[in-house]
Length: 202
Length: 191
Image 1 (cartoon, chains in turn cyan, yellow):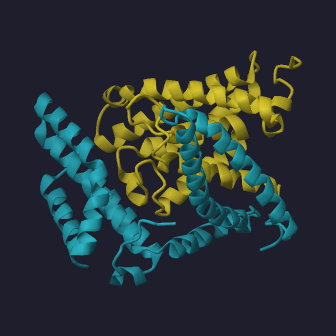
Image 2 (cartoon, rainbow over the protein chains, first blue to last red):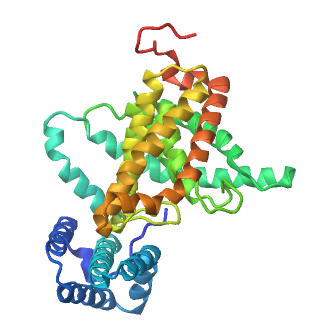
Image 3 (cartoon, one colour):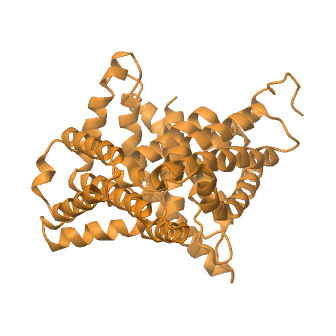
């Protein structure tokens, strides 16, 4: 399974995931507390410097994942230009882009295993209360394992459809996909039970 | 119990697959993905609690950085972007859809599921989605609604499809729909 982790290994990969997440929370709160355009411009510039530091490959990957917010940025700026309050629109969009970019930065520099460890640590109090948080650690790998399986199966179903019909495959494929997923769930459930199940103590 | 975990995980994977597979486009050229259909189905098929768990698991994996949202998006940036209300609202939408099918008895399971999808997957989801947009983009709730309203017709279509899929599921695999066996909450016997 491909994740959004950066193609380049950076020094930030070795930093603790908890620290990075904490820093992100602080930065987000800070940016929401101010409406000064100069501060927001500086924050965005600083974020871009952070993106540029690991090199051009990293910068390109980072900018690519930022493209998703582009449409709403255009809409917001147009909106504020029309109502004649461009300054407020600028602050709002600057803040939004910076926050998304910073959050993406944490995602890009933090391996999935570190984040799963972090969740294990964050759920410690719940575990103390007796909640079965280890079920989460059974379920996460199952989802990661079965997503590509189901994607491949949907592609096979679509191919079989195209071999039979002229129309493009549509929502009708979802029923067989769902039935197969439910059958898989039965088999996986039996397999988990046969291996002692996820319900026992860690 | 083990099967519940497996069903929750498999539905989370199915929601991801529905957002990633390009051939499943629902309408005539309009690029709407089947991802929110997956959310409706999770609630309508698994019921409130397991539906919530399945969609919550999906959202957790998105937060962990897997590119599972439609269009290959994911990571913590999603939770700072204008669509945050929708992503956070997904599990709640599935929960409400599940509550609806568990407590309301209509003529057919498909009708129940379709209406449940409208209540959970549209009413509740858009309320949360518009709230998130209003918060991130600094708009009033009304303005935010105006921005997202364009997507409601597509989602009404998805709710209809969810109803038809559940109707078919009730016919070929009724044992999956546990809420079909529940007695109606108001004490009426189910027909």
